[in-house]
Length: 284
Image 1 (tube, rainbow, N blue to C red):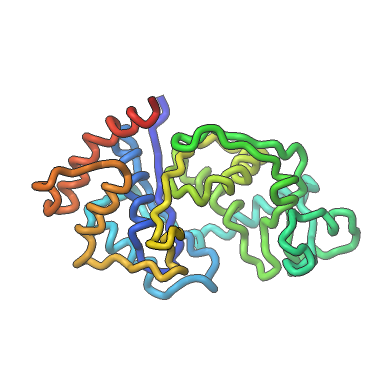
Image 2 (cartoon, rainbow, N blue to C red):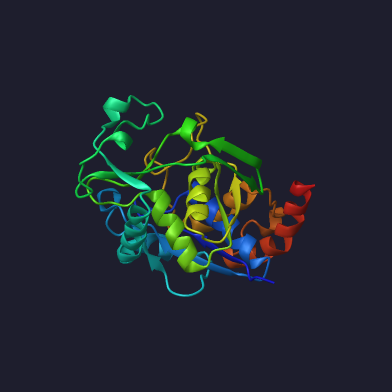
C-alpha cells in the first residue's frame, strides 16, 4: 500500500495567519492520522510578492506549534531548472505558444486563443500559454464531492510562464508535488477550481494522481476570506496556542474546556485521535 505523503506549501508573502494555519493543521492531521509523512515547501518563486523574513517566520511558528515536518524544507526558487525542463518538453510537443495579449485586451473573459493562430512570435521574453486539447476535467474532492469543468470555457488556454520569466503557480506546484512524491493535498476551498488546471497538467505530463480535499475557508467579520492581502493578523509565539485552538474548532474538532489551555503539541496529539472520527462522520 502506498504511503501517504501530504504537504503544506505557503507563499512567503507574510506571516502565518489563522486561515493558513487551518490548512496546515488539516494537512498535518490528515497525513499523520494515516501514519504518513508531512512535508513543507515554501512557494517563493515570485520574488515580487515575497516579504523578507516571512518564510523563516512561518517555519518558526510551525515548529513552535509542534508541527514537525519530514525531510528538508523545499524552496521553489531552487527548482527552476526542473520547471524549465518541463516547459522545453511542452514546446517540443507543440503544446505551448507565445502570447502578447494583455489582461486589458482580454477584458476578463476566457482567453479566446488569439495568439494561438499567429506565427513568428518569439518564445523568449513572452508569456507562454498551454494549448488545451480535450479540456473537460473532473476530480473527486474529499470535502466538496465531484468537481468538474471545461477549461476552454472557464479560462481558455492558460499561462504557464509569464513574460518576466516567472513560472505559473499551476505548472510549478504540479512539478513540485510530483518530485516530492505527494499523494494527498488538503488546502483551502478557494483553490478547488484551480485544481482542475493542475489535474489537466498532471494527466498531460503523465504524473501520478493526487487525492484532493478543500476545507472551508476562514472568513472575516464581513464574510471575506481571511488573507495576508486583506490584513489578516500574523500569528506570533504569544498568540500561537490560542490560534491553534481556533484552528481546531474551525476544522470541527472541539477540545473540552479543560484542554483549551494545553500546549499546542498536546492539542495536536488529541486532535490526531479525533481526526478520523470527524472525517468519518463527514464522509457518511
